[in-house]
Image 1 (cartoon, rainbow, N blue to C red):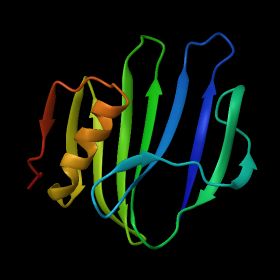
Image 2 (image 1 turned 60 degrees about the vertical axis):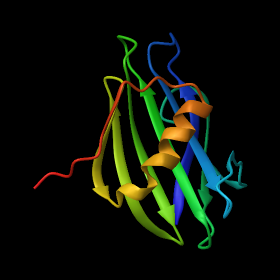
Image 3 (image 1 turned 90 degrees about the vertical axis):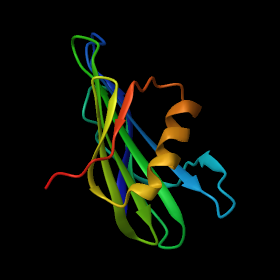
Length: 129
């Protein structure tokens, strides 16, 4: 599975886009990883971007965060287990919301947000019907 790892911002620093890739070990340790990849053009003018290929074995968390003109951060969190997407969450207004998938991975996401010091006020794991 291929994902875009990007760290870019606009010229006047009004918009900032940041993506992270974390690997979850068997014993539960979470670490940010950097994989080699093909360089591509970033979304915003200042910065860099590359497309990396995630291995099929293991659990990975892809975190996409965008800060807009008003300083609000929105994001999308995707958990990939053995090459398949098992959880999709949304981050908006300091809240995490379950979009699709298995809610047993929510604790991993909570630990990642604590690790990179992003505030979370509420976690909503109720699925839409």
